[in-house]
Image (cartoon, rainbow over the protein chains, first blue to last red):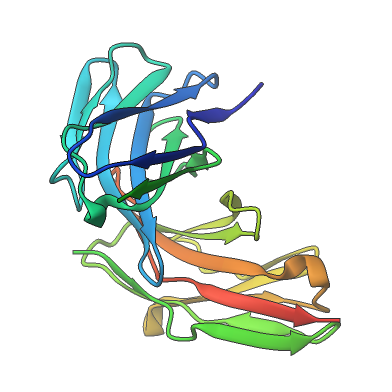
Length: 114
Length: 114
């Protein structure tokens, strides 16, 4: 099993450009999450999904959109990138979302917006 | 609202010394889950341990041990006989029952000096 994979690993964008980050998991997990990690801030939840076709906002959703068309994939979109979105983005998945199951994380995507 | 505080930012120890990481949490729920994750220099997040709020028994797993005290809302983590490979950022995280979100602390940078 590959676990949780993220594409791409690195990306540089100019202000105003758009892009999509892809997350895939092969563990048949119901729940998937997108976090961003900034220096000294820990990880903050952007959006999450409790199942195929459903999404919900997390702690810092502004400027991002997500889609979960297939159970194994969770896409994070930036419609008009801003320098404040320079960060490391992590995708995670968990078997369910009751809180008792640990989340498994992908390797991260380092995004720089100039 | 759930909140996690890790007061120590960077901790340096000499190899073979023990290191304890403090974590204080806030929650209004009676059922919740606490986690520790490790982030080595390579960047990925690795799940270490999970604790349920209704089980205060402290445990040891190899060189890791944890001390969960509901009376003081603390969930401290100890690495015994530290090794250079333990150098990483360690995150404490909280999830409330029925809540799909992990709230992370800001992390403790552990540096083990050979």
